[in-house]
Image (cartoon, rainbow, N blue to C red; front, side, top):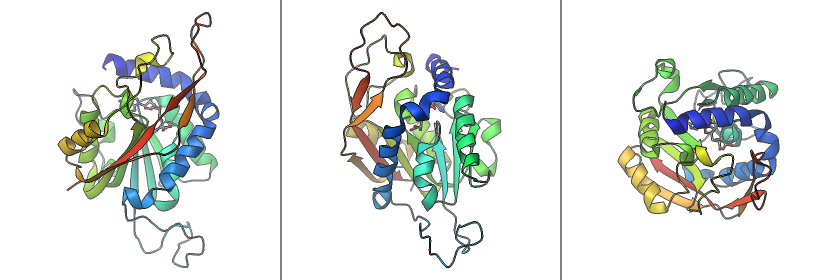
Length: 259
Ligand SMILES: C[S@@+](CC[C@H](N)C(=O)[O-])C[C@H]1O[C@@H](n2cnc3c(N)ncnc32)[C@H](O)[C@@H]1O
């Protein structure tokens, strides 16, 4: 396991219990920003229509239409929660078993069945393990959309991640990335500093990554208009002056289609 991978696993295992409470407002904003861009994302969604006469008993369309989401680096599941009303299945994967447990606890509390929303511990970005055995079954392939919310800047090799995610899309499937535009470097005393591999991404960088991964068709990037604030995690060293307890970030959503 690479150093950053190890540090991410440890850091997010410790963060899992507090993640939703600490970032509640920010996560709500992210849900709104994603839902405001359903057409931009360009998936043939399931209609979120409460009056839908064609629904089966489970509230999903009885037409048999399926829209499957892979929520990679899912954390507690903000991307899944944003897109659940427009999909038939959300599958989460995360490096951190505690994040996976938090994701699954939320899904179960909402009364969702495993077939509707469930996460699994795993890492598809390990250069030495191209196809982890635990993620080899058909249930982890042929997705209509694969999304990474705020994960790319933690990966050692985002291009490898995009390539591996593209392999798990059906032809015509969409890769969706939510991440930061370029920003100043972290204070090295920040508790999350060692988990971050990239200080944001430019449009050209992201377009290059999508193109090389084979998901560059109809590439588009949209800056999320609002200035988003993130509350910092608890500080490891209370004697050090870390400045503001909030970080301001500019976010983008980028999408591309697998040819
Ligand atoms: C900032 S959190 C984002 C979580 C969630 N997607 C969200 O938007 O709230 C980053 C997540 O990436 C996960 N992660 C980091 N490196 C990973 C890797 N190589 N494979 C899978 N997950 C990874 C961490 O465990 C953590 O849950």
